[in-house]
Image (cartoon, rainbow, N blue to C red; front, top):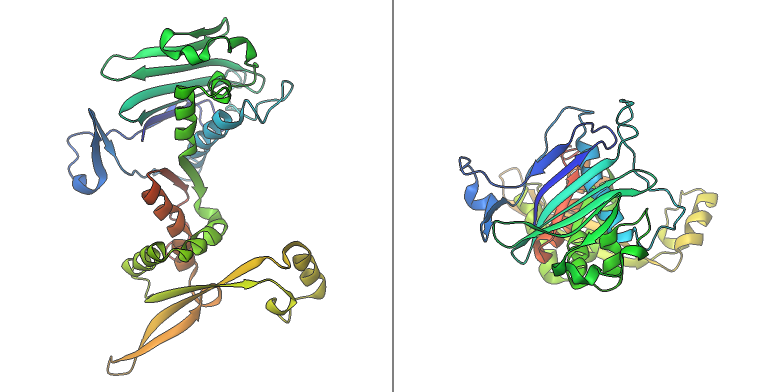
Amino acid sequence: MIIQFTVGNYKSIKSPATLNMTAIKPIKEFESDNVFEDGRYRLLKSAVLYGANASGKSNFIDGLNFLKWFVINSSKETQVEDEIEVEPFLLDELLENQPSTFEVSFLIDGVKYRYGVELNSKKVGGEYLMKSTKIKEHPLFIRDEEGIEVFKEFKEGRLLEEKTRENALFLSVVAQFNGPISGQIIKWFRSYNVISGLLDHRYEGFTAGLFAKESLKKRIIDLMSYADLGIAEMEVTDFIISDDTLPKDMPEELKKSILSETEGKTGYNIDTFHQKFDKNGKDQGLVRFDFEDQESEGTKKFFRLAGPVLDTLENGRVLIIDELDSRLRC
């Protein structure tokens, strides 16, 4: 579980900004539903970021996504001459030449880790990993301009200091050599997902695919019903993409282009079912709706995001959604 994340000097974020998931005691509203305890930590299950347009919410979330990508890939996806794709705050000439900073605290099996990075487009100037099982925190490794110091509890990192490029993370390198602690941390970074509510169409296929499992299908339909969208039932059917399955009025050039990429692959149709009533309010059965053509944009978005949400709950992951409310009320 994530405890805290801080990012500074990154894109539109000038001064360090922090999200803290620690549940403070004075707040009692929704406590039973949204607060859990893990050892001595009392944390929120969910939180919402509010702010005006252009206040940095999306870039804050992007900072968390960048850190995840760089931790997982810096030692294997980049070469020695590659620049790090990080952008500092450009509206202050003092900061544009300073490193961007990232720090995240999280729990793994009741143990708290605090991991931080300072970097610019050329190199990683600072990196550290701290661990605390009780109140006292102690370092596992510390990296600065002078080099990398590895402490005795992180013996998996010894002899790998010289194998770490300036534009790669030491944590990533150690994980590549099957370090047990670093491997656990990489696995934790893989466990959280950052998705965009503006690009919800990307997740429709994922949610539709969950219908293959009856228990997940039922949970999605129950969730749609609970949201009071008027949907009583849903159906996802697969088909093989061919000339016959494309719209008859589609331009031939476009049809050829689509078939060259997708012919023979599996597509799917989604149908929803709504209850119909007579003038006296008597149930007249279900009416089939075409999901794409007849449902609102808000309903479609709710369905598309249902898959990632349920997957997160099923597997104990962390899910961050940017622009969650966009088109959700349509």
